[in-house]
Length: 307
Ligand code: NDP
Ligand code: OXD
Image (spheres, rainbow, N blue to C red):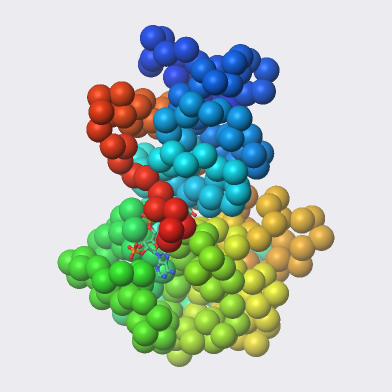
């Protein structure tokens, strides 16, 4: 994400002129005076300097970068949960699932060759989409895909019930979930348990003989979930027919990465769901009000499980 604190600063000042708002690094003043830190990928160790913090706000949905800081102060870490961010991710997922389903990359290639040729067009109701991560974002995407007509299943850590969605969970639920998924959408957080989960072994389990005649991957969770070389190998051997990737183990994706030029890959620069201060600053201020009112903040990260 091309992150710039200016938009947040302006929005916080406009919405909450009563607060003393300071911007790191130039205008922090006495670090002991800082009560709330609103951050995106701060340098490791920085937050420990603010010894009177009451809470830390991740200005995004994920907080994995914060949890990687060994000196992270022991105060609640609050993440963004907001309909604006959720709908942006839902748009991304629906767009990319439909691009696979309607073979858009194939038609793009044909257009470049001036080729007028129609391929088969299975109905969405015949296509099984599997969503890894049935949290805030996965649930919203699942519901929208259902409305488009897809058969939708989901996989989570703990059991879930979602009308019309076949729910799998835990290690024992993973293989049956994968075996039926023709389009796999990944919206998992980065944790020690999910690192490298999208590997060749997993991709080989996807359903490649369904109506789409190939399996597809859409990853908008985190780059650490995927093994880039295994995605390339899966494309090479046919376990995958295509993939849309918004996140990468190294970001920005290095210029020399073979992923860039692959004809079956669609690459976006970690912008599936931008965190827009104009709409999201208010959720942060509401959580600060809750804390100041003596209530616990909502949407906190559980440090033990890592999300
Ligand atoms: P949530 O915490 O609401 O949901 C996470 C889901 O993942 C839950 O269903 C959880 O299971 C499941 N999960 C976590 N660990 C495991 C595991 N080991 N095995 C199986 N399931 C697991 O997060 P959000 O939906 O709000 O966001 C998901 C992620 O999306 C973020 O962490 C972030 O990395 C990414 N993101 C990416 C953006 C982008 O622009 N590319 C923008 C915003 C977010 P359970 O329900 O049982 O807890
Ligand atoms: C987020 C992100 O976690 O943009 O919000 O990646």
